[in-house]
Structures are given as C-alpha cells and as structure tokens.
Image (cartoon, rainbow, N blue to C red; front, side):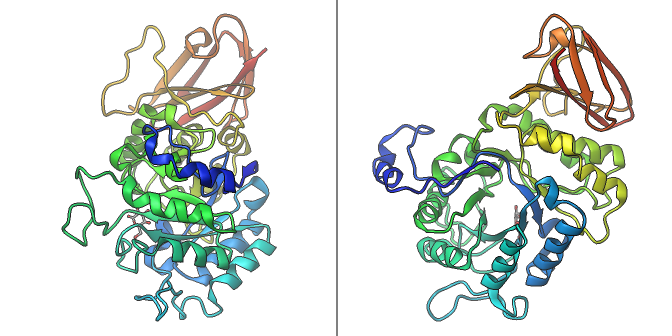
Length: 408
Ligand code: GLA
C-alpha cells in the first residue's frame, strides 16, 4: 500500500500560516497520508459496546489470517467505542478498561504488528464518546502522544458531545459553528507525534466535511449518518456519495461507513450492490460483521479481488452517476442505476437494479471516459468477459454488476 508520512518539519512550519489561506486550500501538516482507502474491520456494527476489547481485536486478527483477508489487503483491525474505563487516570490520560485489556493496549498493537496487521482505536472530539466514555476535547495533544506511544495506527474520531453552541455537553446538529473547529486540534496533534496515525473523521457529513476533511489531516471522512443493516440505508448513503464523488481521492476519501455485509439485513444481491458501490465510490472498505459467523456467500463478496483492486486503484477517483442517452435521468433522493468512474488503466462501469429487476444495455459511447469504438470488459462478480461497443445484463432486484472496461 502506498503511504506517505507527511508530518515533517517543513509542513508543520507551513501550518503556521494555515489560517490565512482560503478554505480548502490550507497547507496543513497531515496526520498521516494514505493514498488509498483503508481496508479493514471494525468492531461496532457486529458487537457494539461489547466489541471494545483486546479479545475482539485478537479474534479478528486471527480471522484476517485464517480467512485469507490479510492476503487480499485488509490490514486494519479497528476497535470502536467502549474500550476505555469510564474516567481518565490521575494524570489525565485515557485508560484502557483493565477488564477488557488485561495486558494493556500496546501489547495488542505489538502483537498485531507482528502479524502484519495494523491496529485502530476510536475517540471523540467532544467531552464524551457517543456511548458516554471520555472524549478527547481539550486533551488532543496528550491523547495523540499516548496513542503514538502505544503504536496505534488508526484513529476514528467521532462527533458526539461537542461544544457547539454553548449548551455543553451535547451533540451538534444544524448549528452555525463549523465542525472543523473541533477536528483541527486533533489533526494538528496527530501530525506532531512520532508514530504514523491515520486520522479517520467521523463527523457524519456535518458542515460539508468533504470540503475541509483533508485540511485537518483526515485521510477519510464519514459523509453521512450511521449506516443501518437495510437496503434503504445502503441506497440512501450511496446516492449521497454520488453527489460528492469529486471530493474523493487520491489521498482523502469519502467514508460511506462500515460495511453491513454478513449481518443478515441484506439479501445476497443487496450485499453485492453494497460492496460494489462502496468499492467504486472509493470508500474505505471496513468489514463490520462477526467473522466467526459469516456465510460463504458474504465472505466471497468481501474477498472479491477485482473489486478490491478497483477500490485501491492508484488514481483514487470515485465513480459517480452518468446519464445514458434514451433513459430517464436521476431523480433527487433516489439511487440511480448508472455509475462510472476513471481508473488508472480504464474505466469502471457500475449498474444497479435500484428499482427492481431490470435489463440493461449500455453503449460504451455514453460512458464518460470511453467513447466510440470497441472495448474489452470484465464483470467482477461473474468473471464474464467480452468485447464490443455495448454491454448487456439482466439483474435481479437490487443486484449490481461492476465492469472494468479497457481499450480492446
Ligand atoms: C457514532 C458513530 C458510529 C459508532 C458509534 C459508537 O454513532 O457514527 O460509527 O462509532 O458512534 O458509539
């Protein structure tokens, strides 16, 4: 995976003048710059608060090896909310709940590193995390140093209990103060520590985070509210992502949220569409299920090497809607079937049967980045290949086909 640790003295100096620059053009020390979307697993969707333990991390790490996920590039094992004790220690440090981390956090990080994996933790920009554990607001420098000393590689940073309009503590919704104000201090603190830590913003799309996430050091930013294990949630997040595709990559990505594949609320077709949409939107692909219970069908979707390669393509550009001639255009608020985006060596074309079973014929001449003439294609779920000026497929309701199209 191509990575750059950007916390150099030069960039820190440039950051001194950051506030004088216009929004979106800030030259800012980056916490850690990863040129591709993160691939990994997070405890929350499967286990909620119960997943905040060393045992959950070690179990997932072993499953990454035994299920062949590490070999496919999944390398972050991330623990979400509820890993700390209910209060900071006498020095003001966050402390891992000793009943859940009997040997501390650093020993887990070291073990995971020895397995070729990376280790992530979760915190919050406000007074408390969303589940009520200590937040990092006002403790950014101290907490970044602690994370670095433990060898933590990934820091998901949530937006609960932030001091947004004086009614402290509370969670901000629709207030005028910019969310950026409470993400910036942690970005600056992470840029100054010695261990590279990826900064994953979890600000739920507030204040158009995609326009400033990179300037506070973010490698990715949640662009919507929490996903749920349902087709309507998947479709609504994907539709929102289409509108902000131009803000993705190559080194800061729209995070569509952790995957629900394997959790039971989606049909096999819907799981294919979920993974296909997240992959082509260049979202981090963070598995969110109990890997000890995953079905062969769900695991095969997560292990689709062609889709992982599209997600990790070096160009890092997200796919979005395109409107073919002779079909109706997108309707506001609804998932549209036709997706395309550039790849370093071709174009990705996605087709989603978003309104029930549908037969598609797409002229490559209508697809952005293609044009007149014959092209070679490969569909990522069936493995089928072909050449020509068009491609056709019939899809069951909510199913998806993803084609990589190249010059023939
Ligand atoms: C918020 C986040 C979720 C998860 C929970 C944990 O809702 O958006 O992804 O981290 O908090 O409490």
